[in-house]
Length: 401
Image 1 (cartoon, rainbow, N blue to C red):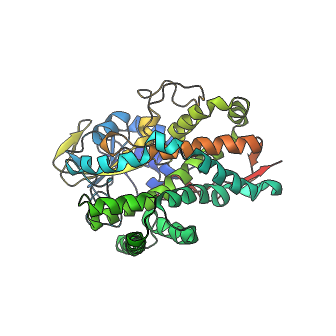
Image 2 (cartoon, rainbow, N blue to C red):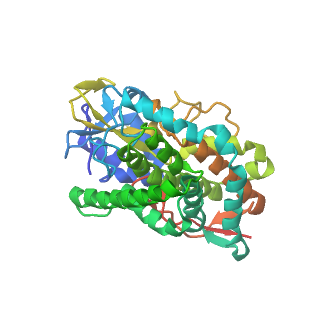
Image 3 (cartoon, rainbow, N blue to C red):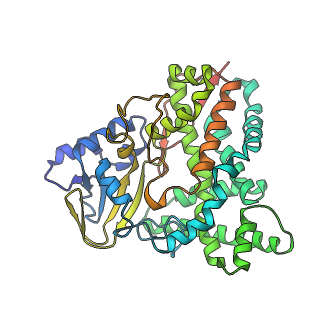
């Protein structure tokens, strides 16, 4: 899709920045350089094919949209996610949003997530055991995909035997196949129905057998009249693909960077105490979820650019993370950066509810991996390819001694 700038910019200028497909800007190996070009050309870019679709390209414009849910809605009209009424809590606007966050935030507190560390360590090392003697692996498919998926299914109390099915559903929710919008929406609808049927079956089992997991917590809230079944299902429609994909993407981006930057890898091998800072810095620089979508509730302006009611706004989280107003020297990857207010998990009221879980998964993965495999490189001659949807790497072949 070709894009033009809302303000008076020549056609050749916006084509040189964005190319023919906006996906190239988000998902390429040189994404950071292209994000910088977008920021310099911003603040808002509009599609000539659809004047109701714009992209914010600067930190100022993106922050304005993220922090004003009264004007910029995240409901299903902004981005369909398999539920006509909205995946909870991401697609629920105030005032209802706060009620759901109060129910869900206690499930992912730092204390509860830290208590899972031994379990996370066990999963990480079991996966490494499967390929360490081989001296190579496809990091994407042998580690980044199964690790967070197994952890999240454990928290939900769902069977590992369904892991492949969950991976398929996740793909259909985030990257639905199809030649038209109608075909892709239909594919998302099929995936959401699979989730509905599976969760209903799992909840029926919990009626007769009490378990200690997230679904049992939801069932308890249903019995107390705090949640309805429809609300539970809309939560799960978001939780399953979100829990199975965003950490995968973060791992792939982090390890792709470390495999190609031995000086940074050596830093965390020599000083594991830097890993928590390295995780935050890699999240900031790579921005695995480069953008989120909102839709305007009314006529408004963003950084002086007029937007009519019903305009779909793709908000660049990457722009905020690479802005000098966020951190000093944003193009420097600094594993000693103590203050790092990145927005890789979003910002405003819709900041990721599972961010504490993601953080401990990433920290443990980097720590345990580098204890056992401190030296590794990207397979010589291999060119990384990024998939559409989120910033996900299709294959990441690593070679190590």
